[in-house]
Length: 601
Image 1 (spheres, rainbow, N blue to C red):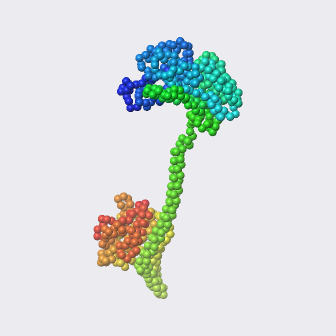
Image 2: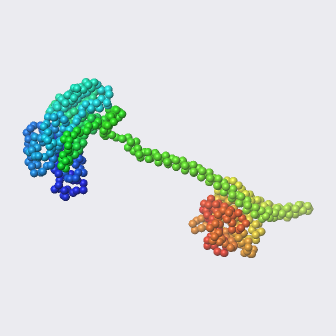
Image 3: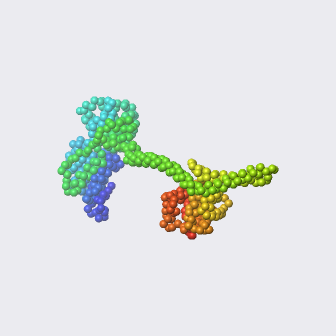
């Protein structure tokens, strides 16, 4: 199996002649997790170097095929296969691979430096290492793994060690027996071996809660079946009645809780670093380096067995950790909470502002009503002489008719027909006076504005009647043209009368300099093209100057020179309050023409 790993920025075609060839011999088969992780670590270790690397990978599968003839056949095959390849460094992964390459290196890759890894100090002790070899020694720390187990299970009183029936399995058991024989763990130790896989599973399922279960390797069981140790450990741990521990990092994630382990990926990276130095022509000064071990646990198994993370050592590698929503989205949650707090403050502020705005609007509305009322009272003050004249006429007529009726009653017999006519005149004059008083009373009403359906034609008619006396005094004539029999709007009669009265008095004032025969106000009502009710009042005065048009509806701006300048401003506010508009006709000629538009009902 060949892997070509080019350096960044260098194409394979351009660098083929300079590619460095590395032969990797694995003790196990290609699917063993340890071999897969070592290969990953090697590739990461060589990645980024100044040259391209061609990996040639061979798998002895020595754990399952241990007869010498098998290895001899492989040596012959590899010697023929790589005779002309030009290997620059050989890497051996596992003690079996190391022994194989020491024995057959001269045939397969003569004179080529050797780098080994995944080999323990016990394995190296029985091997005569050549002078041109460098390696990474693995340290499977069973004692520290048991210490970790005691830390996580403080109530444990015994240790059960599981090993298989292969020579490799038995060597593991012998090593652990030797290590534990000189240690005072304060617990009894039992060794579980010589069983089939089913026997192991049945035995561990019955373990009591005070037990620490240490699974080493089961390469072969008592029935002669061979296994990948990682899978055998997973099968056993899945049915165990207590947490299981191991000294291989590949066990973590299969159901084993954890252990003090080295990672095979790290071993591969360390081997790549040694090989890179050799290829670069700078052989490492330290021939043997030790791999690093650290506590590693499966967070899911901690949850399964109810073990608190507070019992873990500080340097632990916590694998398969599933963060809480708070840990995973803490920044987003904090940002959302800050945003919600800000929005709450903004909403609260807007509520306060809205309440203040409503209060201010209510106060302004009341002040506007008060100002409109004062404006009407002011207008009525201007009309006081005309009103007195309007009331004096019917009252004088009533008095004269009453005196005439008294004299007729003195005749014998009295003229009843004449008396009837006199009484009819008295009734008519009384109604005329009452009408004037009613109109005055409506204009003087102060308080809540009542909105109701109103015929704008009747509003104009009643206002003209109200102002008739004043218009007579000013020698001004009013022509009223109605284009519709009835024009209904939703409005307030006194306020609408105030608008009409103010506009007519302004028109009369604008024509005061004209001869009495030319003083004529034209009032028209009708429906506009957009369906809005329109009321226009036009005069024959000098009109509105361009400068005055932009300011005419502003408060305290008077075109007549003797008023306060509030009349038109109040009239426009009344129009707006009724959903309408009040504006001067820009196209009007020979005087001013102001138009009031209101939504029709």
